[in-house]
Image 1: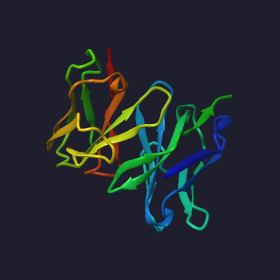
Image 2: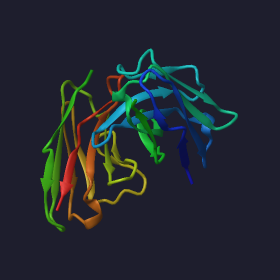
Image 3: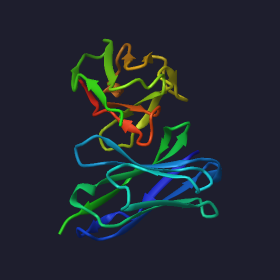
Image 4: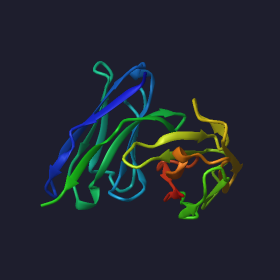
Amino acid sequence: QVQLVESGGGVVQPGGSLRLSCVASGFTFSDYGIHWVRQAPGKGLEWVAFVRSDGDNKFYGNSVKGRFSISRDNSKNTLYLQMSSLRPEDTAVYYCATDYRLHLDYWGQGTLVTVSS
Amino acid sequence: EVVLTQAPATLSVSPGERATLSCRASQSVSSNLAWYQQKSGQAPRLLIYDASTRATGIPARFSGSGSGTEFTLTISRLQSEDFAVYYCQQYNNWPPITFGQGTRLEI
């Protein structure tokens, strides 16, 4: 069955950096685009970034553009999100999710990022 | 950026009743709209895509309708496990992909 497992979350100071990972199994990872979506505590869903299956085409939400970078290693079935210049408003649970024609059909359980001094 | 507005923010219904949730787009998104269910402490789950197509394994009591700027998610004969937060998402005009703010369905 499809499984996505995020990791790498934790507490980081404002201005700091963090790299999240999402390990996939149960499907042919290299055939699918993957999204990052986040959810601040008690708030709704916010789309963060998307990378197509080949890793060459990347797209970002306005609030993270220029600070976050999405990438993937198809040989390791792994998606990454490199986050820099972190702000308190980046505090959220970060989910990875598979893409099916730009809707998100399988989701991981998320990893919590807390930006605080 | 397409803004999605969901109404109501909270909907109180009883098991066995029908629930109707609304999602309005600030500009036409054709039929490129999806609905998700999120239970407390869990990841979202895809329910409906292309405005009216049920995702794999979703019960027939969930149905979606609409096109352009007005969309509806209907849950007939509510069951206890249906009480959750529901989000709409558009993928017609992107980036960015955008979500509505959610409707909480409660007893």
